[in-house]
Image (tube, rainbow, N blue to C red; front, side):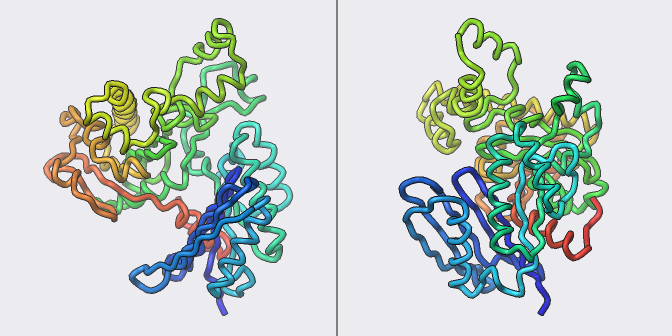
Length: 409
């Protein structure tokens, strides 16, 4: 029996997201989430997907999930109840999302002791993510030590950006000693969406110039030339760039010194401020764009300011990346806000008709699930909504690596 299934694991500090896919037709067999790990009461939501219409059967349970090993054992148990257990000979590999790969990991990588140690060494530049990713890797390896385990890095797609874009203008020796440079994140999403957007407008991804706007609670932009990322908004960490749900995005670095000297705040307090109490929630108390738009429509001034700041930053990046690319074939909106907020898409491109950019009011407002164009056909740049699929991208990268069928970037 040929092994064609890939289990994708995305392990967070208190959660495990998972999907089981069959790579013969790239279909999902099961998806799920274990959350509130280590708390008094955890929750497991498991969905079995069957049939060509994607009919679902959902099981939800609550109870203590003391640690990540218990979480992954629960995942294995849920899959086994549906005849999809981790002991199946059809399981080819486990693909792990790893947030930070530094300069070393620029491709999906088979995990061994050396790789684990290097991921751990990078933890200081991704303290909220890499340690949790490692817990998932080590636990899954204990459950299936005979299987290939593959790390797929958020930063890998952005490793092609030129040195002029990757470097910060600080002392080179200091930067190199502490690995300070632009790495970028959401790479699996930017990779998947840039290719899908190019195909949507009938272009070979290797010849298309695409601006990708990944707008979720975390948000990032990228400029992709011929399938290779040449610029991205997130930097050493996921804090830089666009306004996000709880993160500030771009900020004068001297604000940190000011808050230390004048505000008496510690480095840890400022870290919490910029990562968890800024962005949309800092400006208006909400980080849900649907709620913010509701408040805007009711005349709430704080919500309007938050929306305007968000859109202004977004429009500024679109213009900057247009200049970086020189020619743009398609601008693609993706992730929760990008896929679902017509007001954000319309406001971000308002007044950019001179650049060949606009949305068609009716196409933009029309709800739909799949990839679609929302721009007037006569304009020179297509505008698209492309649902992202990071789990499929991780599964594809993993399967291609273990079967020796790596596609060229």
